Amino acid sequence: MSILSNCEITCSCGKTFEAEVWKAVNIFDDPDLKDVILSGRFNTVECPHCKKVFYHEHFFMYQDLQNELIAYVYPKKEQEFAKNLRQKMLSEFNALTKDMQDFAEIDFEPVIYFGIEDLIDTIKNEDNSKDEIDILNFIAKRIDLDLIKIKPSKARNLCILHTIPKSKKSTGNLKKDIVSGLEQLLKYNPNLVEYENLLARIKQNISCLDEILLHKKTK
Ligand SMILES: [Zn+2]
Image (cartoon, rainbow, N blue to C red):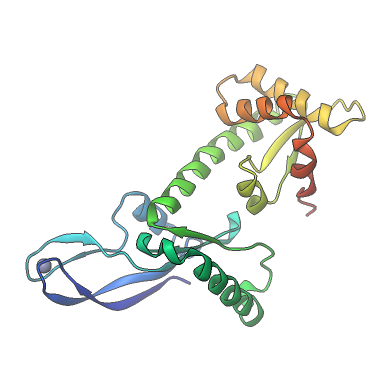
């Protein structure tokens, strides 16, 4: 559920007024709010006295449960309290997952951001990743590739895409099959920058796959 609430706001002209701002955003319920955030129109208010339009920065929670992203977005200036705020977030979040049905199945931790820009960067990166994953899904049906799915929240932490290919012709060595899967994918479409980076990362240190594969999705 997304939550709007009334807020008393002081404008730089010195006058105070009331306006509604979002305190919680649920992308499943309100998908349009994602574009509002990306466009920079999120929580902008207009001073009724001087007509100035500005972003009212205050805490809000962003939920995209399908992508395993729950972000506590604090104002930038509160970064100096990061340690305490992180603790507060985790204890609040634990209480929420215990009390609320919607949160009962959540098996990942929230992330903390200071300033909406960090959230916008994450959303943009993941939209780019999603484009490459869609292309992988399309190509996998045409050439002999199986797909390995990684928990999205873990993939985000590890800075990798949550779906990676492996060759269907198994050598009996999963890591080699992934390298071969990535090579086949990039031969078919050399424009997949994120998969190219992943292949380079694996070739540099193949044991990085050990940690990635720990978080394989089972369902
Ligand atoms: Zn004003």
